[in-house]
Length: 203
Image (cartoon, rainbow, N blue to C red):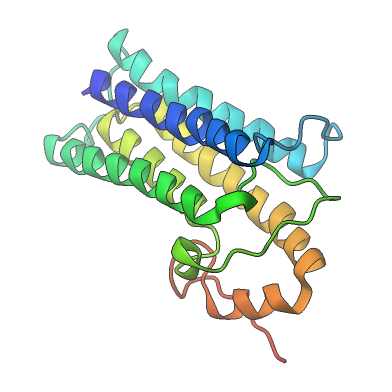
């Protein structure tokens, strides 16, 4: 199972970051990466640091299992591993589908001076952050496949980094840039799942 988990993780990372960035560059001349010169200690800087740590731990979990790190007692169960495999594969597919829905507006990180179109269709009609939802699902699936301390830490780091990025960076940015249009969208569409985390809004 660690080998399968590592293969799924590497495929996900290659497709979600490498291939998607190449597609974006081919279409727009811009690979979509933002935040290379973030102010040290800023909220987005911390979110990026935590996300990079989550990515590193995501690879380290199955690698450590192959090196002999045992799973946590009580959760090393074949049904859980099988469910985790399905969830991880669905998460990979959902990540790619949600990235495609974002089209030319896809970015990694936020540039405060930049304005992109507000995407509300496709996967974004179901949740405001479907890419992050899919990433969390992938991390949860991988943790279930290889339930050791490092894999579980990767899941926790991913959730914390994504929550910080979404709530403290992206939502304030979208409110500033898109104003009432974003507030209307956020009032009817959930943050990560349909109907959950909608923002109250009065016209």
